Image (cartoon, one colour):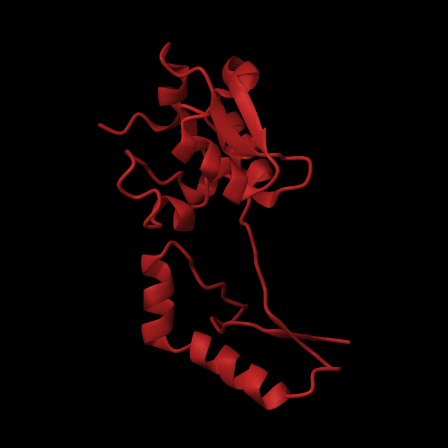
Length: 150
């Protein structure tokens, strides 16, 4: 039975690692999910803040925190996947975390960069990325996007 984030209310959970919401997108998402599930005010004093999502995961792996709210890609990583249990927080519980790729105008070899982005859009690569916890973003009309920056 999946109890969701209410598992954080268990008396055996003393420290909950999240990334620092002041500057980390995953930390802001964690706080939003905790608020969405109505447990934030009850667990706020248990929060241990990592400087980034990698340090947050390290808190869990090292035992410095009892549980953590980390990126799915880290929960599925070889370092963490056999360390315990995890569940996916529903997407509707937090704002999306958008990540992007850009090709700079000043880049010497734009063609290689474009080939890399084309490669990353291939169905077999997007399927592989999904298996590691990454979901490709889609632009209106259903196409992946890449931006060009000055």
